[in-house]
Length: 455
Figure (tube, rainbow, N blue to C red):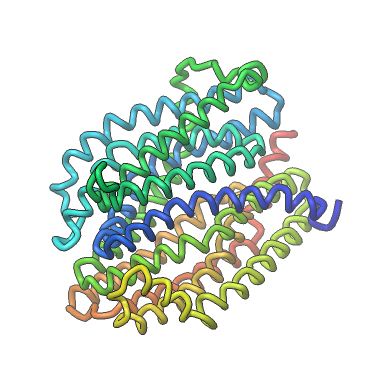
């Protein structure tokens, strides 16, 4: 044991799989966008807007299903192995129920004005099949993933997701561009079908592993009984947090939609900016989850100093990664521009806009890493509402509202306004979450609860 409460090798063995899991998940998104960008910048932009809308709608189910990880972890920690399969099955049933909502929604979404006229054809072809299937499939996949992650078996997820990425890449290329003599190019609709087929393969693979004889014997994963009370308990935990997160996702969709109505050029820059951000945010997301799990163990041991040392280690890793990101995003940003030009030859006149966005993205990634890591510690202590309310509030008031006002004034001729506001609001988030961390309320409340239980 070290000052971190764990040996360094233990920290790395737990953290690296979490980060790799986050990376392989984001790669599917990135490959979709890059393949579509090669096909048509219009299709890529439409998919970006549609992807934001899908995330906004489907995340409610996914975030609720993700609560199964907590229940699996609790049962695993208490040695009640025979109960581990139960919350997973309840969330699978919940995912199946969502088809009743999302299939009719996919048939009506053309009436909702999701896309600007320039992106409506590609956008609707992209979003309709995804809305019908992915809301439910992603929920079921998340539930099955919880079975492995909740027991610390992240490597299984990494392997399955990595294989899914390879399948998705080949399907993307074949279905977006078509194959002579077999089928014509399908554009954004082809990318949607590729994603659905990949997700189905992923769910089948996870389900087979979930029902492996060893898991059936030890964890009773074949105990598929519907338990209404357990389902409602999972939803009671997941719904409040998912609704708060919905505000944040709605804000990002609003921004993407405004950009698409303002100018095709601004929308194109935003499409590439979101792709780059998603590609590099994997450390902040995976590191935050790993830190939260490790810190929760230390809090349970009343090792507050260990939490501080562990946070310091993760922050230093974030600084090192961001120092490396200086190379592609700032020092050699010309390489990124060349890659974008190879994907879309009509992008040269937007280099100045894209350079500004790259500088802003680097600062955002630095600040996001700091913010997510502090949030990981707060979450470990049960202080989950503050960071989510903070993030959604500053995003709406500090970025979305000013952008909407600028747009309605007819002054939204550049994306620079928004990408100046984004890092400013994140600085505010970092300052406030740091202040919350220093107050130690997250630690004091949890320790008080544990003391009350002992008494």
